[in-house]
Length: 565
Image (cartoon, rainbow, N blue to C red; front, side):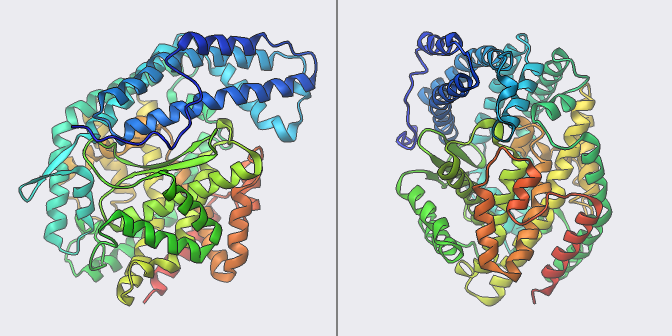
């Protein structure tokens, strides 16, 4: 029997099953005459008002599916959105973009208010090809298949069938034998689904490559840099990769030696790299997790706790683990309601606590933006900005982890773990970005070559100090557990860039907590039509991933980890 989920957290103001009516309403937007800049601004408001109704309904349907991938009725609604509604929207989005961009008043729109929107919509016209619509529908179907496979993945543990997140949580365990057992169980589980994952990724790569070719690009990597309207170049990314390898990895090796010593192990194996020195998980029930996070947020800023309590009271949090639930965690915005929804599928663990705090950074960002400027428009959502506030929230709450770890040694260990996580965020997502550069500029690679490349990049970065002998296959195929490669291509390096900004926030917070929290709120509610650099500046930090910035933040982070004694 499938588990029911509440639909009351989003507003369904449009019937997406009635496709003809939806099409008629979009066509009516195309028929509106525009004879002045004022008319054009009114038209943009009407377009947005209609589109956010569709956006909220589709977001709600997607969350419903992620919450229960095994419910056929929920899946049917979600697939209808992807297979019927989405192609219709792609076709009409192109027509709406043409109407806007071909208007004689388009370039008379105020640059400060509409400049970013103009650039994004002009790039959409550049990228649009009718023949890509069925390819993008197929891409979404394959992404959905990934959620189904991972949502249904279970592992036998001590005679019981357990959801995959439960096994992942055992990697935290103090007992080395338990960690090793969990790591190898995960490898067995991945090995079982590997043929499906390889087939999915092979097809996704070929689809995405064809989408890029159809749009006039040599590869999907170059296509995505335009699609994401990035404010930096491919070469900038390669230089960032090199700067991190040069300055962060040696520091990571030094820190790994310290963690190895604290664990008292002779060799530093992959299951030691995940070990936590705290004596037990931070909570056993989701209600206890939410109670504790409320207190941590309240001590940081009352507004943060107010938003969390609002979400808790209005069914906007789904945090427990269960079979059939999609893997991972995310925060999504509901533009009609003005709310945010946080989804997570994690067993009780240090990571699940940090993941909730992370997503609350996104949520606070969403609420502040809505209160200051109304619904965030999709073109304004740049991950380099969004991740600044999620990573920033983690580090602003660093000094309050004693709420879950009251024992002094556990508290210090928890702080070290969060700072170690900050360190890994400087190179983990970045190595994932490099992996995707390789995949999409070498689209005809084999599954074996893909595993070998993933292993090679992993050893250059996060696993550099780890003894992986005899585990080359397990490491090589572990890319299959990363949802971003399947569902959010090229959403990786932004985590590393934004962590550099978040570390600056921590540095500021240690000097002046009140002023730093106010700057955090100011930036999180800033005008998102500005550049990434301007929004970082409003937050009191710099958008800078140059070699000096990487070196300085790496040294700062290494020092504060070593200072915790």
